[in-house]
Image: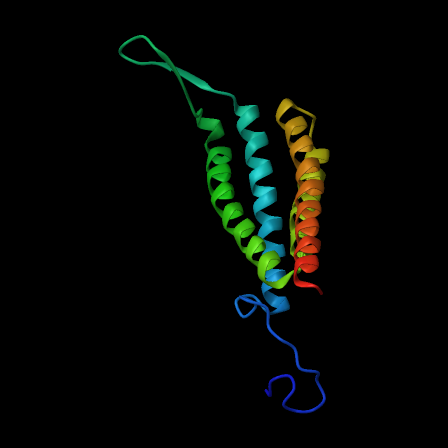
Length: 160
C-alpha cells in the first residue's frame, strides 16, 4: 500500500509524534470494547462486594479485622481483575488521546455503564446497586467529558 502523497491522489500529511502506535480505527474499537467490559465488571464487582459485606475475624491479640466472606469471593475477584484491566484500558485511551487526538474510544465507559445500569434495573434495589447506579452514572458522564476536553486542548496546542 503506497504512503499518502506517493500516488498523487491522497494529500500528504505529517504524522504526529507517536501516531504510529495506535493509528487504526481497529485499535480504537478494541479500546471501546475493553472499556465496556471492564467498566461493567468493575461496577458489578463493587455492587456485589457491598452487598456481601464483611466477614469479621479476631486475631490472636484480640484485634478485629475484616475479610471477604465466602459468598463475596466472585465479586472480590471481579473487582481485582476489573481494576487491573480498566487501568490498562484507560492507559491505552490516554495514549490514544495524547498521540492521535481521538476521544471517541472513551464512549466505551458510557456503554459499560449503560449495561451496568440495565443489569441493576433487572434486580431489586439494594445498597450495592444504589452505589452501582451512582458509580455508573458518574463514570458514564465524567470520563468521556474529560477525554473530549483533553482532545480539544491538544488540537488547540497543535494548531489543527
